[in-house]
Image (tube, rainbow, N blue to C red; front, side, top):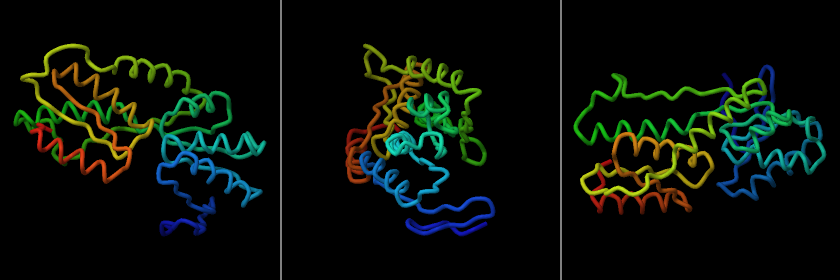
Length: 223
């Protein structure tokens, strides 16, 4: 296997050549600019890969702006609406869903049990695997329909006294559409397992994340 590439460095493999790796630090406008710069710098560019949920839609906008829709392939991760529509339309090759809904759901399910001293919910290897789903044109509509049902069922619980309930928190690494689907899973599990769970998304990354966790600990959070 070839060594990982660094930003700005070319990585050549047997079948593909990665011309560049560009980062944006969750700056959406920079994400689109990265796509535009890549197109300008590489007239024969064959494919763009978007790592985070917002990256592929930004690449798609850049490609449309350059008038190269269909000429430059787009491979995505996660399940942004624009990506799923692009797969159906044929402007996006496909995406890999990490099923973030299940991230949130299983986190709450496991944390509630652990807070009660039940360690049986943990696998022997302590690793909980959420399987990926490859979304292509053949299954995109079905995937999107099921996703909408999950999102609709993951609304915050209405009413109900939190007193006496296990109190949990789900803290992400930033604000991103990916985590909205994870939050839907949290909400569904919150109702199913009878717990109270806050979903916190730090807008400034690690600094806010640390502050949020310190506050939760001071408040006596259960998990």
